[in-house]
Length: 328
Image: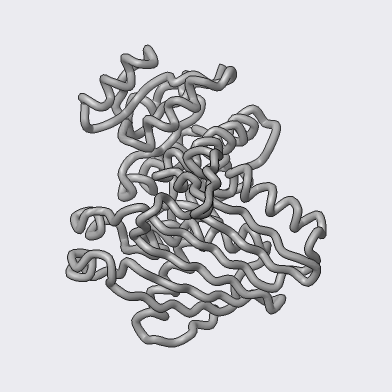
């Protein structure tokens, strides 16, 4: 049995706690969170212990750590875990500063411990099937990729101020998906954006509506459409066009019942939020990390992927500011 120390007992930590406790090869050994009430609730639910960061790192019975704490703690915790020879699962992003990520990854490389970065959308069954069909040659060479990602409602202005902005907080998933699906590193990027959803977001120095266009060395192009608001649920779609056809992955609806009548067809809305939409993806990525810890696999999503996603976010912000395409 592999013992896991969970850092962060908030919303994401609670989701991961379910995966850890449900897997036959892992045990939620301990919970670490500065908010003792959250930690106690989770520890009682899964009969786990509460530890400090130092206790977890020095505990020889802790085999791996899952970092789901505040973003500004990620890099420090990764370095501590690496130096104490713990296997590491970290939620995105590794950090909001590119140089800090590179420092962190250097420590991981020196320590030679596995690091998995939780870009969970790669493990969504629909998106994974699309990727597999593309790799199998079903549509030939890729020509264009369209990624649609719209949140059901905007976050608070307070959250925006600590999030790093839409590109580092929201679009970072889509940057990773574009690289994952196309299988190349983009060579140019161009971004445009507006503040249309909530004036408070603009006052906080951010945008809430964005389009990003990336070009890849093969000539394939990817377009990302983002919005902090949709009136119909969590909008998550992919469309990959190739020389021989088209692959699409649509929204997961609240149910699959459709009502047909004289006035047309009525169907359910997409799932409301990411916790529902990517439920299976969270389980699948944990299954993969267990394989990593057990020596059956190496991390498919690494610190390099975390670094590249933030690099593209930073370059998008640069493009937005100067209004020009950036060569990468």
